[in-house]
Image (cartoon, rainbow, N blue to C red):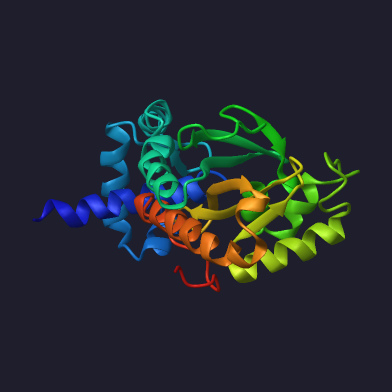
Length: 259
């Protein structure tokens, strides 16, 4: 269909402007996307008429328009991340018989968005809407493991808190832990949040390879000894890989292959 190439070019412009720190000249847009300048100007003009881009005449640059903002706001209102992840969490609960949760980073904390659990299961301190120090949770560490070192340093400038006397107590110790987690593709916390409970988490990525959310399984340590954790982790990683696919995302280069 003749409309499809034009649609792809328009989407490429939106992605480029969304990733840029500010408005861009039309020449830069054309060069980045490999388009003729004349075609780029025609495309930007058409997108501007519909409000998807806006022109800043004083700077002779193009930026995102109000229509792009409206679509982004509508996306958030529809709770897409939760809707995409919920069936995956339910399936994971059926597979392992333990609590499964979805968490995101909120500054230096893990914020839990979803929780699915089998009937008559023990209640956890972590629940929907609860925030916990990210460096203590498996979900938080699985996300931190894929952030740039400078960003991790900015998130943890001072003293490290703990709940049970366990977990990373310094930035250096946290970095070592995150490096190990990134290499194997999953994170584990053993009694860092609640004595007697452990969690295994793996992270899902967006289309840029940025860590978006983490899927976690939490269990009584006595029910799953450490030698069984890799098999649990494989199921968690498979669920996280499915969420990545649903987000049309991709893992960053060098990530361990999905199970």
